Image (tube, rainbow, N blue to C red; front, side, top):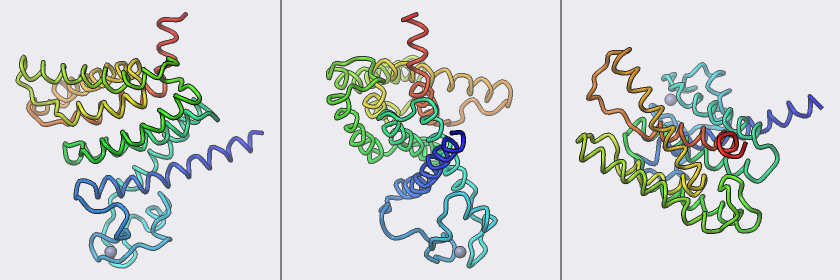
Length: 265
Ligand SMILES: [Zn+2]
């Protein structure tokens, strides 16, 4: 039994790292406006098209010691790190939800979140293309909600699908406006507002608002460390998207437990 469990987790992990490898392509290409399907991946330095052996998640990077096989140029560990993170997240979701439809739905959702995290970290934008893709993927949840009932909505009503994206988006819009008027802070961008549409579709309005709360908590804690401990520049442009992503992940993984403990004891 233990052996079978380990085997299943290993398969889930490998699935996650493989998806992570594709997410690397999305993270790198979408902001550059290059197609994510073709051309095939190649070395950024010598232009050699990568072959199967170069494309095994994590392992290729380790075996090749982080260098291109042809020209020896260094390959950023970021690629392997994104693959590792995606693999671990896939296992984490499976550990919490097990063999139910919520698990593959959250695999899709977290893949979207990983792309948002790294693109916003690199470019300080959340491209419309990514937001729209997230919303198209979010339609998956509508199907499940209608035919099966979707636990994260915490409601059987199809209305939750309408409220899901709108409540968190307008809350975020209000917060962004307030911060602009009262603090003249440009910290929150429209991308941060728009990304709550797909997040709301996947999490429903209750868990989305919880995720928003977590996003500000993490962002605030990071800000305190940044200013008081690291003594860095107060005016530095720090993207908020990564905190939105962390909030959404925590809420997706533990939101139901948090709500149950708070309100339904
Ligand atoms: Zn090369």
